Amino acid sequence: MLVIMESLPELVGTVHIIMGPYRGNPIALYMCQEESTCHISPRIYPWNQTVGSGDTPNKAAADFEAKWKERDLADDMYTGPHWEGGIKPEKPKPVPPPKPATPPAAKTAAAQDTKTPSPKSPAPPDPPQPAPEAEDAAP
Image 1 (cartoon, rainbow, N blue to C red):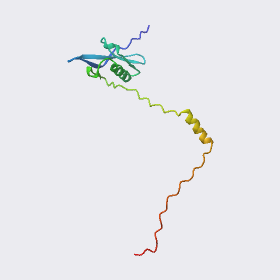
Image 2: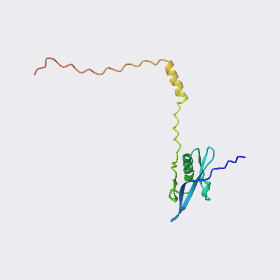
Image 3: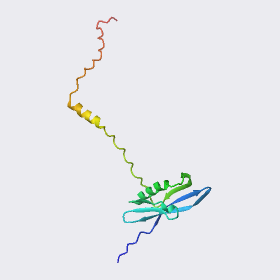
Image 4: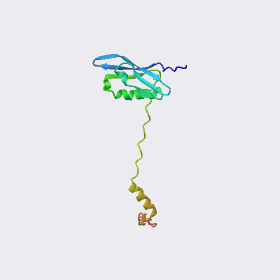
């Protein structure tokens, strides 16, 4: 019988919670790897409800940071997360904004313009020519 054991948690970083004038002890962040997914979270209640998941440790770290910022803590109430072991949060690439769609009326108008010849507009007038200088100029 083959027993597959879940990976042991690995320390990957810390977060410091600041309550009033006191800076608390660091809260450890642990990562567990399953077959194709990484999960990063603290082990201490109530902070253990925030879990970052991703295909790689870097994506899981970015997901954890995004979910951590959604908590009810202000930015000045914590420091970190501080990552160890070469983990650098990999933010997802921003999705480019969709190209504006041409309204259907404009498409049909453009199609009609190509089918029907447009009336020729008069040619713009030629620019004025400079007056020729006299050859017999007296000195």
